[in-house]
Length: 99
Image 1 (cartoon, helix red, strand yellow):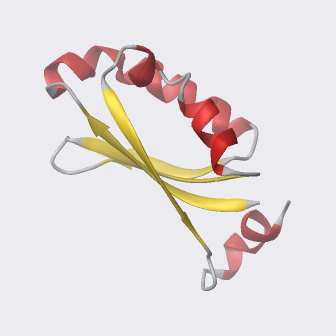
Image 2 (tube, rainbow, N blue to C red; image 1 turned 30 degrees about the vertical axis):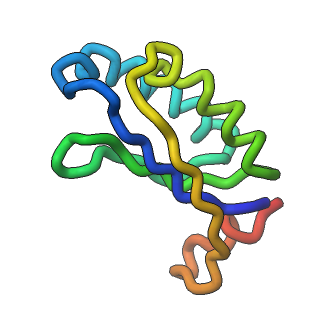
Image 3 (cartoon, rainbow, N blue to C red; image 1 turned 45 degrees about the vertical axis):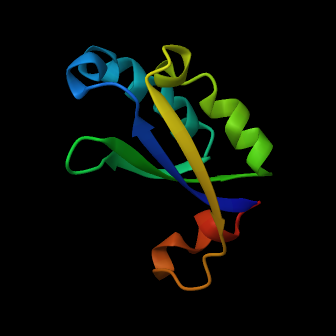
């Protein structure tokens, strides 16, 4: 598995994003359920969010996020940064090394 930081940047004012947040979080839950997502949350100020994820490759992750309600409603853009987690807390061992 490859590891990614996903930066979500809103392309509309947060007042327009707010009604879709619960749908976005329900969508993210699918990623948690399949073991792709480790953590996620909003940036401060509320200009977007950050997701720590893993997938077989970037294309697979891009395909997943293309179904995000933010993407479907043209409310955000996504930046995918692949990284190698060489240092991490021991309790993350299984998530990091599991394929």
